[in-house]
Length: 409
Image (cartoon, rainbow, N blue to C red; front, side, top):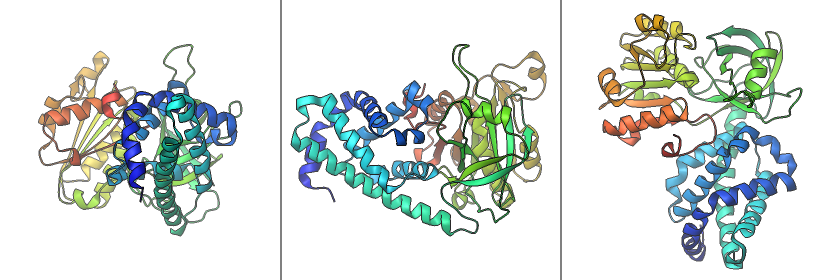
């Protein structure tokens, strides 16, 4: 447990740290990458460039300091971080590097205000949190290794098939190169793809598993990420997968991770609503497949938002699932469809709103799972709040650094 003095000091400095949090985290990453370049490989440099990683870390620090006297509140965030760390094969020996550079960054930014007592208190608070994370990550690693076919770190997989799902999305069916067993996963989890890019070394990437668990393969479905402007390059790894990785080639994968998973116990008791925006359909499709496979007779509602039919992926798969379940409702909306789409292929033109959710789902009694671009998720959360849905009935997944949805628009 933390000392009373440390708790008191951390709570006292929380407003000052919050006011300078992003400056501290920017300085932290600068120092760490300079002093310990070996850890750069764990971090997506695109997220560094946009500032998303710095904002996410700043938010995490502020949340921890705010709840320093009640760390139990942070356990969901701890689980998310631990799963992410295990996907990247981060180990206990990496934590001193982070702690040393974080304390140095606080000193750099706060100057004389960072007294020895404050530095000692922050150091103790960091070590306490690090201990919680290291313990949880050890449990995750042990679980990964104990499963039939389980592993940690990297394992080579062969691309069995490559299937075009839409103008933007391609699926990759992956089987172990050693033909050894393939461990199962929880619907909603992701795997980590390690690519030695021929021109630009980069960090591993997480991709949601888009098929049902207990198949003889893993499947990921990757959107080709285009640059927002002509001067901005597209997604380095997504484009490499689309253009350069073909059937028969080998890629290295990390084991399934992630805390955004389907709760099968609750799903047997309450309707399930899956709200997908764009490529956010991938973990939700895995959940829908699991619900149908388990023959759970609870009602399932799948709402998929896409720009138009050209980029609408998995329509046939989801319609096939609906045909195998006695109470499965599938709705599609396009926000900028061509004229042909207005007459076929979608149930509504526009954006997902509280009114549509109210019309299409039993919102007062259901559990909601949603995933998509950050503005989509912020809009969905706002709509569910308008409808009076309890936060305990909402679960969502960010692709990228975790932020509050209120900051995502």
